[in-house]
Image (cartoon, rainbow, N blue to C red; front, side):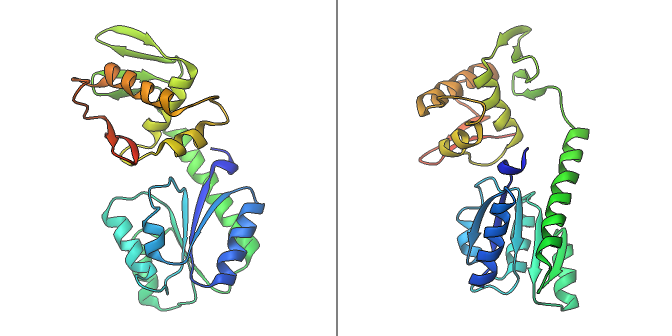
Length: 231
């Protein structure tokens, strides 16, 4: 994942801090979405974020409550808390709820950017170490290196566009993926990925992987929202 594809969410009610963070992260090459409250973020929490920068003192639901909810829903999003609170109880709650860092305001912006870059480097190395060469989905086995799916000992070739689309689903399981997100994520490598193309890809994936393609349990349609790969 290159830096431009890394999507960072900011939840911060202080306009000046939120805007400063967003502007500098964008300058550093990241995609950024900024929110005033936890509730605003929750409405977009399935947008494929790679990191959340989270304040504690927020209007409505506070940052620790949001963090706890993310953990309860098995959300794997890395979270760094940026807060003026130095209460030990807040620090304990943050780390017990899965935060990876707790940074006290005011903070050094350059140090924060370096922390973020180092975090993504660590995640990239971990992903490389655990990379799979193929994936079993239902009745088929997908090999992205060979652009193939094997089902019932029969090999089916995929186009590069089909492979890229299928790999995106495999790398983002158990969440709703909109057509717009797919088109945006794959635009650099897959040309002319239209809504009709995506519909046809999903139909093909169901034929390759589903025990009963007309009653899908893996590649499911979420009405008016998109698709999801259930694993």
